[in-house]
Length: 344
Image 1 (cartoon, rainbow, N blue to C red):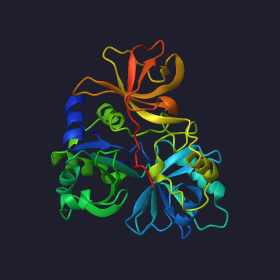
Image 2 (tube, rainbow, N blue to C red):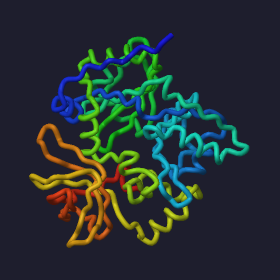
Image 3 (cartoon, rainbow, N blue to C red):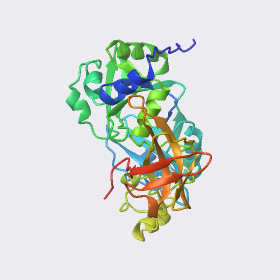
Image 4 (cartoon, helix red, strand yellow):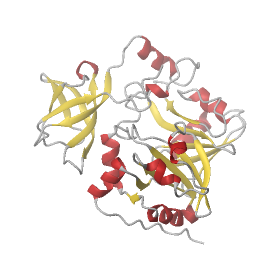
């Protein structure tokens, strides 16, 4: 039997962006990878391989963590969620096999099996300041919106929509409240329809990506990947410096201890009339100090914003940098975002 096709109905980018940033929006995030890990040694092995302390996650709890190479570079940023029945791993888009191969490489005698469930499930994201209240009205039994909003980051709730099982994960997008809904692929169209009919505005890729850039959410292939380490990427809040060894731990510890981070992820605001391309170079007093990695035009204002990496000396809020040809204009560093906070 073929899987039902999801055919969302979208409005316009401005209305979608307004919904996602001021009320509640619904986005199909099924391009994000989803792995099902089972076995008694799952959390122990992940704890030994990644940056965060996750070995003691109780059922219903989750946390972000990073798989890093022996050079301390980012293999992928993972959401690790203990559902009670299995451990759900949320990967970056297209990184499922990379993560599976990495775990398999270091699995020797451990009891661990990993299954890619990306094709057999769908993942919907309900996000925005009113997303908790909007989602609560649709869940069965009906939830208290404040209870959803008070869920811990990456914590999980089992519920239902229109009688269909839904796993709700609170996974904020920067400072934007957001919930991921994991459902079986064959009922995904019915769940989507119920959410959209409840008044939650469907949001397409353009508006969603604009919100990600505006709220400084790094993405794999742009701000995340083998070119960068977790401290450069502002992910220090997902690094546990007290938990002991993991792959790449010595490199990351030295960078932190001796303050040797060479560059930082920054949020950028461009001058009026600036012509900007992704990958554009950034200069300070004629010296190359960084590059633009993501761009977005905010639909509500027309303001061009972006993310980029800038060498430490120039990565200061208020610093104005010059765009290199063929781009033109100026870029102001507005802040140095930290997706999971400043850490301890």
